Length: 204
Image (cartoon, rainbow, N blue to C red; front, side):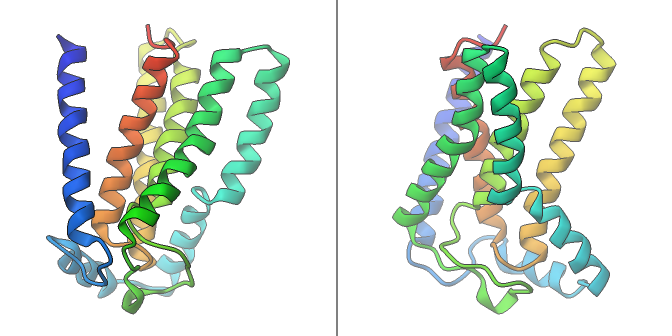
């Protein structure tokens, strides 16, 4: 029953993503709550906030994730953890590939008037949000499945969620993504990593 509900929610989420993607395709404007949130956030930015968010957004950058991912990949390869290794590759390379494909389908422009840092490429969905969701969730899943202490598992999942949220929020704060880009990045990333875990039969 639980799996059926998750599948139904995933299908609804995918449909929502496609609808929003078509709404913003080749668009330069915000939709729904985009403008209101961007105006609210950017009326409250500070030099300190920009500095902090710049460091947080780095946690979702291709350079940082590639370095951390390579270290973990080599460790798993030495331990001959085949399924875990495949999950790691899917959560990074697979997610990047899917994000690149979606960006080039929907072709949404970034919110240039809000830029606080330079950023190229298309906007929908947010790559930082999507890949952070898949990568950090995959890592937390692989770590917590070996931990029997319920409180420690809960703490690690809370830290995982907080890290991913802050990375997504940093993209809005720095003005390089619309809020809908970030939300859809989270949703697609979550569906992607859930499907990957189930496909590899790693879930208990």
